[in-house]
Image 1 (cartoon, rainbow, N blue to C red):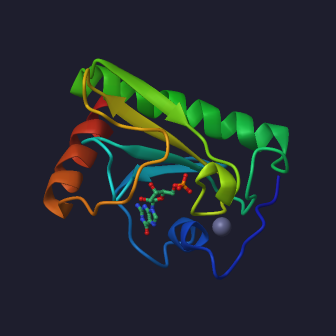
Image 2 (image 1 turned 90 degrees about the vertical axis):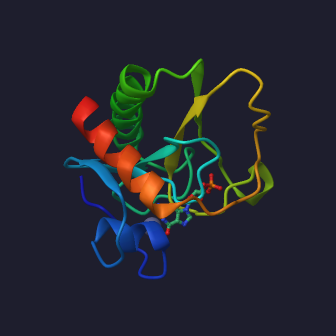
Length: 141
Ligand code: 5GP
Ligand code: ZN
């Protein structure tokens, strides 16, 4: 499976290593890294390597690979951070709150009463805290 690229896309740039990320893992078809605007500590993204915007246009096997990566990250989050729960959230199109048109699945640790909503507003996280959580989760993968 070849991976289409959009040179203007922020996630394509991360996939290509042109801009940095707090990387959790990488395999043939996917990459997972920490969200820099975490809704809760440990908020991570499972991202397809190819530039396919949404779930209706991505090849089925690329979507399946991204789901498998999201599950792997979720297992690490459950083991290491012990949240009350987690959401897998995947937005398609601006009307659904998608801001980066390159398919990704949010792995969002949840805590009772945390007040998180489906379409949240971005708040930059503390880089040291994100890096420390990245290291913890990498060891838990
Ligand atoms: P969407 O709104 O498209 O479902 O989610 C996009 C996510 O990507 C947002 O949660 C946002 O914080 C995250 N994001 C946007 N730009 C960057 C970036 O440069 N690096 C990282 N790690 N995350 C990003
Ligand atoms: Zn892209």
